[in-house]
Image (cartoon, rainbow, N blue to C red; front, side):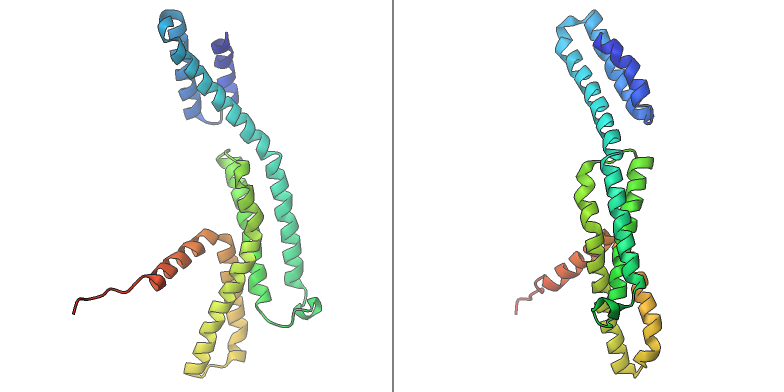
Length: 217
């Protein structure tokens, strides 16, 4: 009776993945064949039925999380986006943080982090249909890490600009507008693709900290 019920449920509840439907139906067909013709393998049939039940439970949980935790994450991202855009549009001195232009690349990095959340939600809920609440911590820290990485981008690019001015005698005032635009774009890019930045930093640190080759004299 359980197998017959599952035969009706599987095409209806796993219909968004043809591979899962085929796999589950094969398991049920095998279990049914065992129950009818080879009772000595009854435990194998129970195991097959258990696997199919777990697939259905997992699919139910993923759908439920998509419209509960997924919606919470969406509104969290929208809230962050509103705050960051507001900060981006306001004058820095009105927020009592001075006139340092690090404010803008950092905010751009935070906006990139928010964009990454929205893209990830769309991908896992609408395309892959595998949204899992284990992703929540990643989503929570993404805007914060974007702010940090945007500030780091500003520091690195500013160090390069200072070196350019010292060596080539460039006019920092003339270059500042274009450089700031580049810094904002880089801040957004690093906020959106944070893992790439982490991997690059990891490789850089390994090269810096790696012991030098020694030669026997």
